[in-house]
Image (cartoon, rainbow, N blue to C red; front, side, top):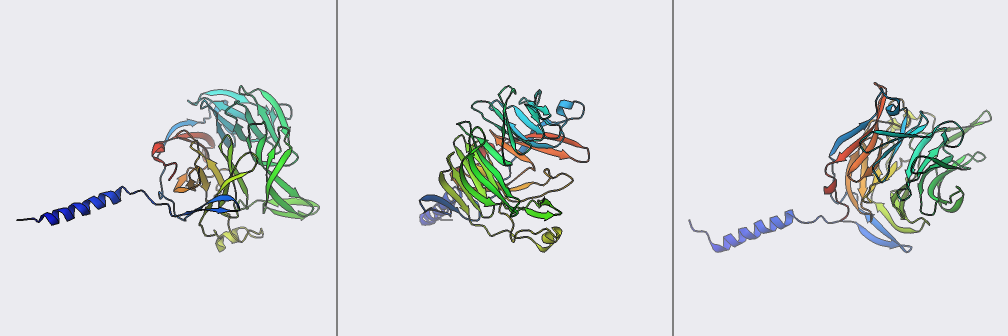
Length: 382
């Protein structure tokens, strides 16, 4: 059987084209524009690289009943220092527990009480990796500072409750504070720069926090549904932060002075409540639409994780057991992936994910560290 050279050349062309197409780089279909002098990355609805599953392998579990140093009561937050040591906000035990990178107990920081270095309700931990100082939000209105060895330094008393905060180089904080008026029954979230005494140096924005507030019998009652429009803050690196107000799908990347470096947007339809969901709230009014997101995390490569779903199960008000649907953006604002994170994820750093888990039937709480086996395959840009 004779085969013409022209046919062979044609077949080689087809196979070569297919091979090139198989290795073709995905094309980002968004736009980069300038609005009022600010660079805006406008992302399409679908991520550039599609959906990715984090290949998680549990490599450490901290929590057991036979040793009080490992027995937690209402875990709330986790932080990791530059040496890989693990700090745990053990809220109802009124302490911060420190473990080494192998899960060995090292130290208890603080204790219950109202004196220097004593907690009433420790809930958030932030660590300055440069100085090693440990910052703990206590009783909502205080930031307590300890040195790298866990020795108490000082307490910063706030006049308003603090929702979130991040230490900055000058000894102050980038923070989200609450602002509430009992007179006109309004509630706000305030993004601001605080000095080392906790006083506001500069306010960057104020956003309504649509908490249900009612005055009854001379008292003011507040009720949270979990679906309040809220202001979220995270830290990309030592000089860069990202925040977003969940009324719209928009993130702002700023420096410590609040200057916007660029803005990230995503084409996304407004989430809405089903009638069944509305009925569950009974007399408590809910907004017309759901928030776009419920948390912002960042990892050690500067990627930004935006949590899309809110769930609350069981008896606890802060812990749940439902995976979180997440959008992943690059450090420079491009929508890369959809993925899922374990419930109560707190830290993603150097190829590991740290979360806490609650077994309500067994009455046991534990800190989990997962190795992200496909960490190096997760792209950091386009």
